[in-house]
Image 1: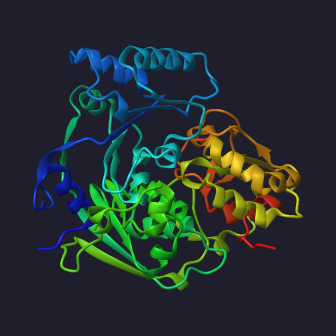
Image 2: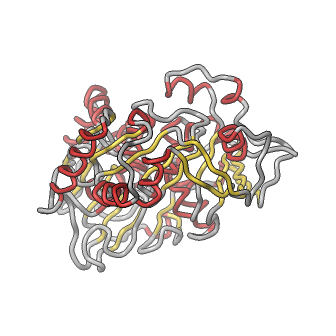
Length: 417
């Protein structure tokens, strides 16, 4: 019987010939990510469990991104607890304001194809972009991993998503994953893997795949999976070995379902307030007045996203009374966008450029909105109260669409000029 990508990764990890959906197995963890929000709770639970040492400090990555810089008085407690824990246990992989955790985990080389990775953030599914099994967990599970290096998982069923053809100009992978989430529903992939394949997927950059893997959780998915290829190897700075090259779904693998798309049928879409699966074509929403635009986050804060937004805004200005906030996903992305001129173009258009981090996406540093205001944002969630009061309306879109909306002062389809 054939195997899916996720089944192959888990079987390889535990030294088994094969696994099947529903099997409960104990995996050896290749890497873990602790974020600044969760670190005090992880430390408390670690001590409560009676552990006195971390199983492998080199496999632990601590990232300060949600609370940097501090916007509330208690934020600094998280820094103190995290730094003290890192010093006590010899953690060397500590990032203080280098960028968003999910960007850094692949960008800095912590995650490789075929790895089993856990993180204390739901969007840990992002690392499926390079062919890893990765998923978010709570602080209790993370404390257990820190002490043992292991965690039990149930092998998930897999939904195969096939996208053939050429993606139209002006459509980004964000539009594609939003449409898929709309079709599946917010719970349509609960505790299942989403395996992406097809010509359009193969032609995507790693950054575009990251946006899709990142948002797999918005359909309830346990993880996402892309087949590692030459682009993956170049991005990760490695040569793929035989196991990594074989991480593709077998023709006779068993999938719980297969959904297929023609790439040419995709068009710009938005997730409307206040559900990620409430998807409508941008053309249906044109004319809706907006107050703010946010381009950034672990979904769409990468170089290609900033370049796409800059292409739309080149020679144009942000509409009067509209704020455009741009947040690069990492310090490296910031530097690259500065070097290629994308940030200069965005600044000339009137954008506010902020430090790399989670920022407005998690409702913290900069850009909070008030009752009745509308924002078009490139991040992954539009839940009530996420970017200000519960009466703020959040529309999720691609960087191309978001930039076009910023210039128009209202919702419009992205048109590069």
